[in-house]
Image 1 (cartoon, rainbow, N blue to C red):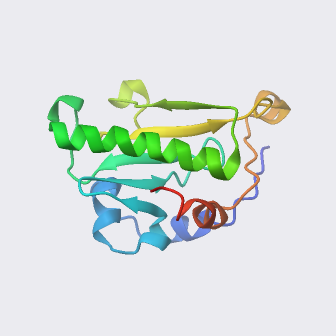
Image 2: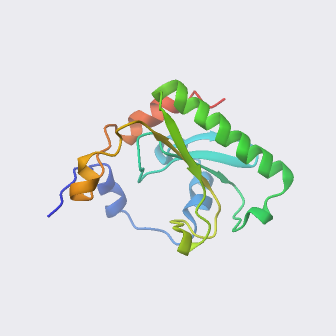
Length: 158
């Protein structure tokens, strides 16, 4: 039996989950700190992944609900990838990772957790961040709570 202490998840489990796209809904709520929205551009935003692969796992998403890269106009595309670059820079400044996994999962078969709304994942990596826990127990240990990560990165994306 696997047990992982993740007390911040209980709020999510207890609340009623509204229908629709989470990447459309969260920016509309105007509760950025509660929703872990780190930065708002004109056409895209940066948000912490609430089920991160590593500490400081961010996502950049357009405000518009777009299913394909082909649907981005040139301004949205430039800002999107500029925010990816700026977010990676902020993570470097705050956490000093040794590398990154940066990418998109387009479509359910490609692993998209939020299907139909494109977004880019920025996952910082450190030598040894894969240890015996995922190998032996299929469990990932994250050393920092989301609120602490939010506070660390909030003013660094500029």
